[in-house]
Image 1: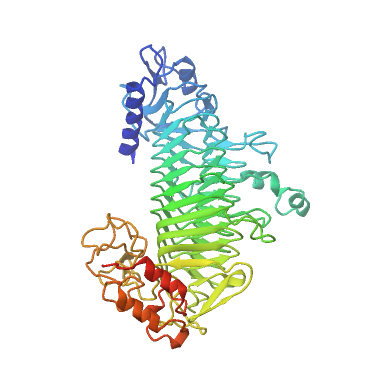
Image 2: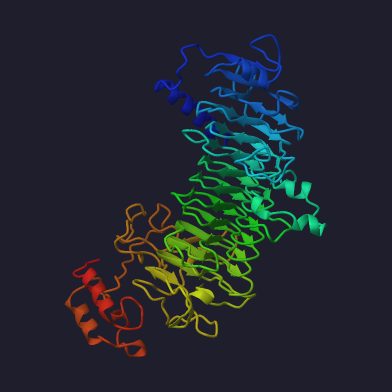
Length: 617
């Protein structure tokens, strides 16, 4: 991680020099801390005050922590300088300097327009504290209680290879708070470890315990929870869109939502991060406690992008043990959502749109896209894997939802849509579990959508919309037993054991075996070019479909309109469709004539035949 972060830093420096990004014509100076006289300075703040843009300030490696005046609440004062841990020759030495704030304040502050040429590189920061004696306050009014270690506002510094732990904020952002308009280029947090140690985690929302006696009923009742922004035990992004890349976000806690990361009105990019063992929990049920790993709120623009992240073993007292999205757009791509927990809906991923009282006010907002993602071993009280609620729309493209558990209530182990929408293709939903050991419906819309019992679909309530195609969805009869004869309605869907490589014992592996029915069974028009050869000229179903991790095989699958399964769509298939025209259920002579699996051969099947006319595999 350190080598990657150092490479990124010098890549930035090289780019700015080559493009004329550093406008100063003076030669950059090397300053050192601690010492005297110049270029040696007694503390970091004094060195920054004496510096000019482009200078490099090196804090000399020492096993003894630096603390006291000039080593906490260090303000870059608009200077585009590098502050790094290193040796007396000016060489960087990441993680060799400890800044101990002794709970006297934050470590570093960026609030004067610093750009991507301001670097903070290679420090260990402990015991930072963002205190708000007038808690609770909105950060737009007073942000003193936000960002326990680092505070960023209207600036865009690059923070590289830092370890931040044992830091606390009375309000939000236990380690880092990226406040509104964090710079023209946006801040970057690269190769950092946020939290890491279970005995010295970062914490957001300490003010709730500092200024409220939770055993005093009057004290608790007088608190207006609408004033609270106890978000982001590790990082809180508000009206800002930082790049958070190659970071470990682990063992952070929020007395509210977003145990690891919270994004509010943000288009943050969260890339290649490990987000593990974070917690969203507070002893007051009036306070939202969603998103143990990541919490996304009111991001109605593009929304955050979560790319190639490993989200594991996070917990939320309410919904979304791994990720929770409220009234926001978001993209979750090439991620692994494993073994997260919650005590309401969706141990894995939870999405919520409009309030329960008006679930369909705006069906176009929010919208979550989940692509090439595995959602496995998550546990929730009401639903296990994914839940799309109250006007939220969740779209899947190549995903695997398996081995998730719902312990009670609606018993939806795999995918739930409660007043929300869910659709997609290339999805494998298999072997999820409901109450205790009873296997129940894998896919359900609960009381406001639809439930499945065998081949029959009962639609009731306000929202029956769950549409899937080219997916493998396990089906059950009314008694809760697997029904191999039933198929979820939709073009190209199947109901067959996906034959994962090793789903039941460690090390688990949810790639497909070479004989899996999911191989070369995805959307015939989807891009399969990245899949290793032989690939049957067709994408696989599941999280690895369309990627270089797809299982290769030369198996050829008939398309839905190929009623005689000879890998060609022609007059023979038309004749089979005509011979079954208008037939329903068990009266259908050739099930392949029912191309959309809705138990009736009709105009929709004819349209699919037309779509694939003269198709040759």
